[in-house]
Structure formats: C-alpha cells, structure tokens
Length: 133
Image (cartoon, rainbow, N blue to C red; front, top):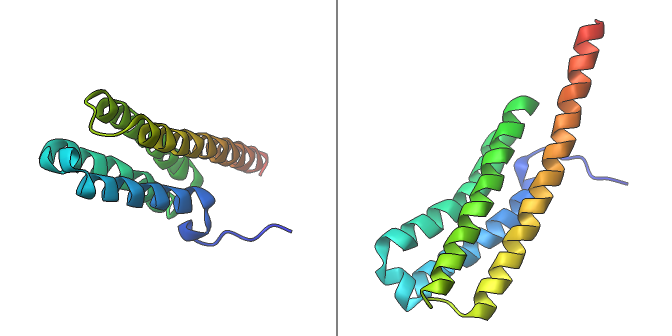
C-alpha cells in the first residue's frame, strides 16, 4: 500500500535533498580549506540547499510548474557534483569524501528524474482529460 503524499516533506527526494544539504553545509563550515574560500563555501551551501528548496516550492504549484522546479533541482545536483569535483581537484577534500558525496548526489539526481517522468505522465493525462471534456 502506498502512502498518500500531501506535502513536500513526504517526498523521498525532498528528504534526501535535505540530508545532502546538511552534509554539504557541514563540510563547507568544518573543512579548513573550503571555509576560508568564502565564494566556494557560499556556492556549495547555496547549490545544496536549492535542491530541496525547489522541490518544496514546486510542490506547492500545479504539475507543469512542479516539473519545471524539479528540472531546476536536478540541475542543482549537477552543480553540486561539479563543485565536489572542483574541491577534490584542489585537494580540499579526500577522494573518499568526494566519491561518497558524488554517489549520493547522482542517486538523488536519478530519483528526481524518475519523479519528473511521473509528473510528466500526470501532465499528459490531465491534458487528455481536458481535451475530451
């Protein structure tokens, strides 16, 4: 039996995005190299938080808007992966830390993509119903 989703907090992608944002924010605040690079630190935190922000904001709108906000969230996953690679190349983080974070963010991006497919199907279904009325 599936649970009815009534708010963004019910979405697994929102929950995982929050978990990743917490990890990234802690890394940005605790890593001696990143916390001294104010621009990188701010961008890391902003991009990480924007994933769940966009899921939450989009959930409050209709399906076409939700889909658009999910695309933005997925794009932020790419942005975070880029920053992780950059921090690794600068040797600000270890290979192990980088791979752990990259795997989590890739998985989240895939899950967002799956949710996007479902939302797109609902949009198409609603268009067909409206067309037939």
